[in-house]
Image 1 (cartoon, rainbow, N blue to C red):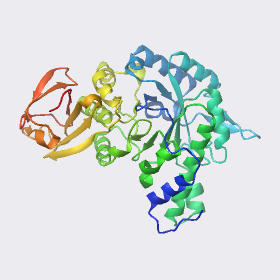
Image 2: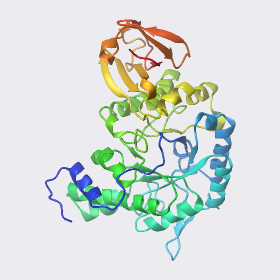
Image 3: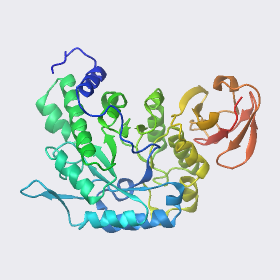
Length: 400
């Protein structure tokens, strides 16, 4: 079918989906945002079979599994070469992927893997272009539970090569590539979480669910710096309506415990990803995790916000000075409110005064501070003082 070149890109994407026999809803997987750990932030290209086994052991021993962290995801650099039949073999770092999957499953966890629609992955290893069905079946045979599918070399190898200077045509090629792997995964009959990593291009949130996507990156890569975290948070404004059970906006993996983030920044980062109904994929050094980082990653009250079955993503409500207020509706009529000092000064507002009417609340509200565990009363115009990049995250069980 030919589409008019003048159509907006998002409309073109929906048109591609409409003529596809793929189901119009995401797979039954990921009814709440996936929780787990990904190898890239800490190991990058050094990751090995032993690292994944050790990480699975640490997730169990640290109590992270009990807190909800289930997926152990291998990122790039596991791939070897394809044989004469096109079968992709693992490299020497991963001698037996089926045995690794069996080991991870024996711990009550699930295994994730990485590829991309281009000829090469981001790190230059074999991608899935032309081998989508073959690779998907291989993943299912191994026992893989999660696929991160990263755009990378598809851009120069296909999009720019086949459709130079034609953004609409490039869009169709990209959507078709993700659709092809979505169909291939579905055809295996195995529930594999499908994670689209294409940096939020072309309003991916509008068309990814129709391809079987369970989550999709909304931005470029995150870094363990406050400015990176805050920039990504700011880009989530207006996306709440696209998230829900089985399909989630993905602002990228967690950097909690990485870099030189302050304790307040780690706490705010984790809190806001929980509020955003984002996948919670840790990326820190598990064996050397500091107690305070462990306490952040396993805060059951904050995780409960993230895993709330209603599946509503937080919405940006208002700001005053350098303080931002976000709110999220929860199951049973409850509400979570995040008050964040995004300024760089130690105390950017002296103090901030809360406006409950802006949140649709009337009168004093009984709340729980999810970081101290203390009960508190929120009253209109009450003063709240937060250090730089810190957060007050509360849950109101019975808002009025």
